[in-house]
Image 1 (cartoon, rainbow, N blue to C red):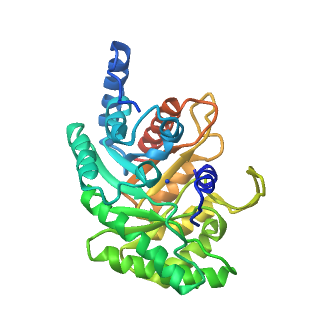
Image 2: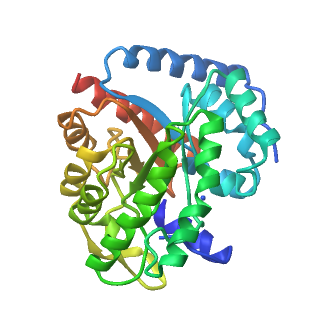
Amino acid sequence: MQSQRRQFLKLMGGLAIGVTGVSCLNSSDEKNTEAAESGTTEAAKKLFFEISLAQWSLHKTLFEKKMDNLDFAAKARKDFGIGVVEYVNQFFKDKAQDTNYLNEMLKRCSDNDVKNHLIMIDGEGDIGHKVEAERIKAVENHYKWVDAAKHLGCATIRVNAAGEGTAEEIAKTAADGLSRLGEYAEKVGINVIVENHGGYSSNGAWLAGVMKAVNKSNVGTLPDFGNFCIKREPGNWRNCLEAYDRYQGTTELMPFAKGVSAKSHDFDAQGNETETDYKKMLQIVKAAGFTGYIGIEYEGEVLSEDEGIRKTKALLEKVGMELA
């Protein structure tokens, strides 16, 4: 998600460190949905974690206006049998303080028995900006999303530990910005978590060090299985010039994790993700004592978004039951 999201934000004029309704199901869809829900019920009895759906998995559909943000909760439940969702602020960017809109989101969730878990925040400035005044401005830009998360019943917002300078300089400023935001969020019971999202944040040891410096119970990490590219080729975001070992990075970030992002791109004939060993990853997650939400974040190019989500869900359930 990191690279594509970054491109989108650049087009919109700034970078940090995210209409039609859901159609009625036909009989075939209903059978698929019933099967998915049945499988989910069976798996839920054995999994050591719960499955959520990250809205970025449907970013193409949303950007193309084939679905509206308000329809996300219904689609998660009806099409995939998933009852916990993770939003991306890009898809309701101007609605953070629109109470009527937020109430409509809540109504859609209630109507479909869906729980709101987190909001992923982009485009609100660098929390680790080297200039203190700009850093404070970025922190304060995130306040409205903390309040929106609280209104929606979310537990968490995801932010980016962005800044300019050396690794040591950004670690210091990012820790300061996260501490300030964490203090505000703590007052209303909201967690602030940082994803490995490019640059130094994709260095597991670096981000773990920032967490230790912040040392706040409501500030943590969101380990993403696939976002461990520290440096990409300019003009060719697909080509990673400097990568961090994803298994080592996840191991380093799990002690601070308040969520996990199951990134997926493509699958082999056996249903295994081709870039990440999900069994190895989930063993790391389980060894850390994590029992929270693992969010599906499909970002592939071969399968449709719907099929990619289903494949990722099936893989999580399969491996999760093997490790039960």
